[in-house]
Image 1 (cartoon, rainbow, N blue to C red):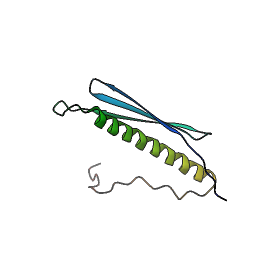
Image 2 (tube, rainbow, N blue to C red; image 1 turned 120 degrees about the vertical axis):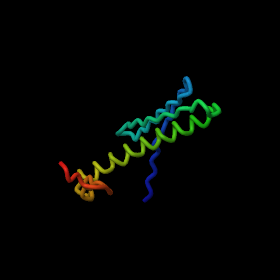
Image 3 (cartoon, rainbow, N blue to C red; image 1 turned 30 degrees about the vertical axis):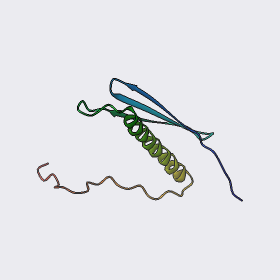
Image 4 (cartoon, one colour; image 1 turned 180 degrees about the vertical axis):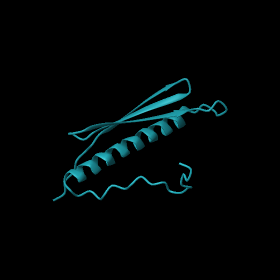
Length: 99
């Protein structure tokens, strides 16, 4: 049987002095997560507030998505279904032979 759940997300934007700040809030019913994002207008660029809103909101939603995935990873780990954690490794580069 299908199950439908609505999770409202509210995005608030504040623009001041060429900087747009966004806050995205997700309420799941059991958890509230808040993502943050900012966008700044470069001095040489035309001031188009809509673009700053889009960038700041996108960054806030990306932050929110990362938090939600971390919560899911933690929940999976609690029930023993999580994959093993990856080691932090340097992708490329020289080892420090002088250390």
